View 1 (cartoon, rainbow, N blue to C red):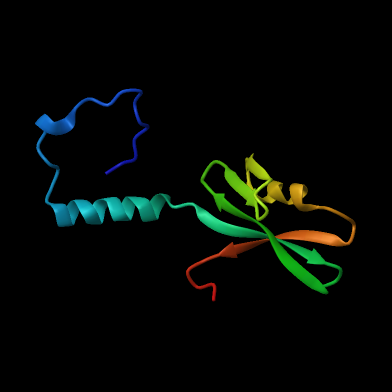
View 2 (tube, rainbow, N blue to C red):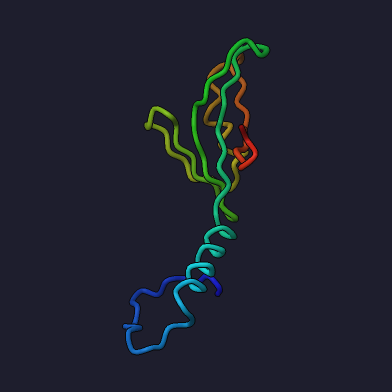
Length: 107
């Protein structure tokens, strides 16, 4: 199963036979979702030299872009890479933004 760009209109597929049974189709679409899932990251603002920190935003990294939203909900960015989001979170010389990647192993 390969991902398709959705057409402007979708022909009625009801006349076509199913590709396979429900369990196999469910496994196929689950694997497709896992393979194409964006990577989750946080933008953390570090205050001073490890004095304090806060999560300032959350992002999703796709193959060709990153989307970020600030935790207050007022800031939204669509960028070419997650690293470019850091510029939007530099608020003073004493605040350093960093990316924290969230993985299944992240406690």
